[in-house]
Length: 389
Image (cartoon, rainbow, N blue to C red):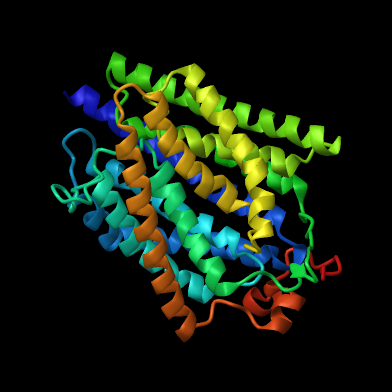
């Protein structure tokens, strides 16, 4: 009894550490994809999210989500830390997609609401105490191992609400044309994507919840293998597609394809076969490739491709689990996607709208042109270079 308790405690702490690698992962990915004049602000926002979201989850979010602290199967502190590692990711997804035109303070205020209300309620309905149990909105039967819907889609629905309220970057859509803003630092994009990839092994593998028995350890190994393979095939599919269309290799798209595959497998990595995981990841990569230009045509300005990676594949991965897993109801998966989607979008839209009226999210035009690093942080990431316009 004590042995399994100790092993599972260690496993949770190890998984927590891997997931925290996703903090610099998001920071580096986003910093590399935005223009040089906004890099420090992006890094500051990512740091703020980890600090604020974690503390809010400690003070009341965790209790709202799970109904209390439980140390029966592992240390209650380890159980908390593992769950705390997830919460900021919902806001990382949202903040990255509204980069280069939003200020730090309103994002910090929204982080409080996401970490302390929106995300804990969704967790409660799916993984936790389940306030909706027995009602027609009961979605507890949805299988979502590590949060294709609970985390990735939730953050992306919030992003969609934010983009609709805040609008695109200045000059992005002009005279019927889509202006492409090149990434400022490709090495950072690659570093960030692979930190996220590594963190995903804790994200999905740790969500099995135990490794102290032969069966549990085997499930963890399957989950990690399925996770990695889905990322590999997602990247490969985009590599092929982008070369067939342009006869060139776009590393930013290839990595987003890999991330799309990782998001897609997050719901069902423990209940689908390795072959099914490859199919899910391949479709996930293809969805990213076609979704990026689709959202641009709708004039939904998303500098990092978060809607394509996290929203589209959060939905696909959850539904795919119902298609490929033997004992998972497809209707339960679809119901979960719909209930969480409506709540996450509507709640986020209302909260962002109200915050925006009090403390505007959008930086003024001069600050946006000059770069938010000057007005928001007073520190430029690359002071020896002339700022981009």
